[in-house]
Length: 259
Length: 259
DNA sequence: CGTACCTTTGACGGCTGTCAAAGGAAGTGG
DNA sequence: CCACTTCCTTTGACAGCCGTCAAAGGTACG
Image (cartoon, rainbow over the protein chains, first blue to last red):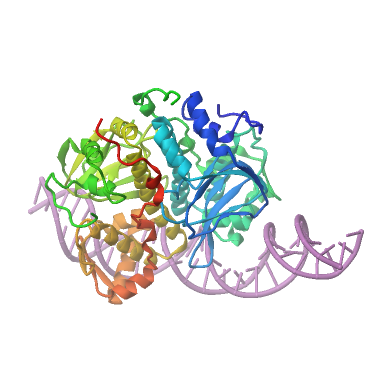
């Protein structure tokens, strides 16, 4: 698991997302596939849901990038999640009455949507998958928590470096990606909205990093010249991205048989 | 539910914590009570777990306060959670291999501990409780996320006000608490570690707030003189603390009967 | 009654925000 | 294929919130 996936239906991103925690049985795979029944192509800037609206469905990103964000009082937007293929969008919200964020595509893409009741069905049918959903939520939250913690204590330079490496790490679990040059469809404005910085300052940092020969951002691509220095500035530790699930599932009965 | 609880065994905090989402059946109550079998008194500064250690058990705070924190590279500690009676400690971590934080009591108190396997048992026995655990995790995370978001965009003054109101709101769901004067066993140093500020700056803000007649912190108590102004500075919206669970449980079969 | 922790105050510096403006790149419609 | 609009990048001057360093006084606890 965990490595290169293709887009045909036989290997789905949701199976890969959940399957990274433990080997899935046939019944479990079948249950998860119900989440991917309704594909649709979505244009760039398509809105998946509006803020403050009632939660009725969740999404799985099949291709493309999305993000969730909310508007702050000071007028600056705050981006919460950057979502890439395989991510389940809305897990954070689905036990609340309404969305606290707005979700929008930031590239063209394909998503599959499913009623949030589908989660309830799966929770009822499979304790192991319930645990896997716990793990999935916990990891999505760990991502956010880690970033927020860093944002409190580090300089803009370190935050930016860290985010680049974090995103690279996430991407490289989907496809083989070259750290030397990879796709990152985020404007400097958006990077600022993720990291709590102004676009002006983000730009200043990029200019400095470029003149120091560390990296360059051109269009929607990141080019890394000096990996070592980048890792040092970022002080990057990927533990919080870990897929390893603790022995918890050992305590669970083996995969539920067909009902 | 949701209001004043006493300490005798007939009304437990964990039942109240989970019970705020929906009415619990007898079987569900029984399951949850298994989490509270092993009480123990713990002194101030008792460590519940060390960072980087393997996760083997979770705790429910029965009385007293605790917190989780991690050490940052810059030497400053970052406190992640402030935990009060009824909170389940370790929910965030239990699908990971090891603790990313350290957990410590910040007052004397009583905790009950249970092997994390107990969660697995409950997940297997009751889909409704699984959903309730989802909700509980999601709310604990929302607390953290909200705080972190604010920390990125607001001044020290606003962060401190917000944290005071947030904590007051959480406390008042356990017992009736007077906003005019309530217990808050956190030093200025610790407040700084929660909010990403130095103790020096926290102090400066408190001095200013006191001279403006807004509030006063003396010892481990907060005294509020001007609620209105406090709410304005904090721009406090309690949506993220909401107990309301969306209609999700309607989709679940009613409470599992005795096995 | 000493030690450790917490609060308070002052001087100083720097990272980052604000405001403003100009140039480049990309998408749209005629 | 060319105007037009919109968004993104880049640069400069200036200000302020908050951190750093240091030290003194208070308070709690054994």
